[in-house]
Amino acid sequence: MAKSPQQIMGSLIMEQSDLASSDAAVDTLFGDMKEKEVRLHEGASSDGYLAHIFRHKAEELFNKDVRVLTYRTLRNKDFQEVTLEREEEVLLRFEAVYGFRNIQKWS
Image (tube, rainbow, N blue to C red; front, side, top):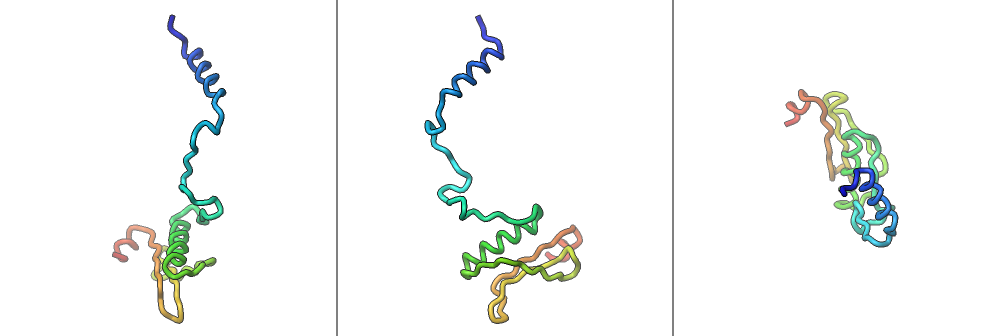
């Protein structure tokens, strides 16, 4: 006689409850990285992602720990840049460009 969907689900739940969490290897999103090494970006927009990548590259390429980013408005509020400088030399420059018109002018 065939089992009903409820009976099948009940059987699965009982089987799963017998498994211990140590029975299976756990994959993590960040591989071998420790949780404290994972950096989160502030904000939920592209600016947050830009800041995250900027900080990562500043540390990776120039061994600089950038805490605060200062955005400079170029043409308008939707066209900004952030730079990493050392002795008035620009080491790293990122631009945040929003809006179709600004993107056309940027390229």
